[in-house]
Image 1 (cartoon, rainbow, N blue to C red):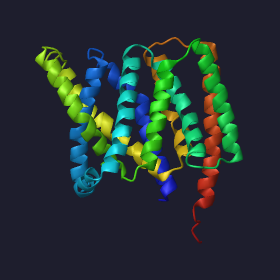
Image 2 (cartoon, rainbow, N blue to C red):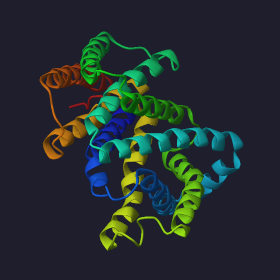
Image 3 (cartoon, one colour):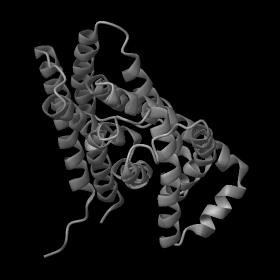
Length: 298
């Protein structure tokens, strides 16, 4: 399998999982969003520790942790990721998943801009057409909000910046994600310890099912994040940007069909424009992948 096809497979899997993960957070509405993210960091560290051990990456992990520059870069990516997690979980629990999906619809445009401006990636003609359609869809969604959509903007900028940092980081996907959780986990442990000392916290107070769901946040965190960082290292940032439409599409459908959030007619128009842009971009990408794949001789 070529690196491009492998990257596409990783990207589709990552964003497909992120598109439905809101349903998991809805099961934990009894937990404060900040506390939930703290648990996510702690149990995520446990999940990444197991994965690193199984993959035989303990050596590279130790080497990376000794490199101050690598740790500094991962601290930046961990900060962006933590902010993104908190805002998304809060929006999901608060019944604002449609606004959150708007943020992830905007995010690919930001990734494309970062790819062209920072990394000097060039776009083909059909890609520009796709961007134009996506811009139209995002404009309709932004206009429909009637105010500055701060949830959407925070989600778009933090995850767009995260993708760029991970693209530039000189560290493999699994090792980098493990370092991020190593950085976040001590802060999360202190927060949970203080919460428990004050007699609060969901763990031990909300039943066994909630406790199991909190522990499961480690797996929910680790799997799509590794898939995403693998895709980001194998694909142009602009391509990664358009694959990101899969996640907000899933969130959009969950918000409307499962959670009953109101859907206006203009949102459907915006949704159609964005999907049209994705279809154009995907068609162009398919032709490029097909042309770059060596044909077998008869």
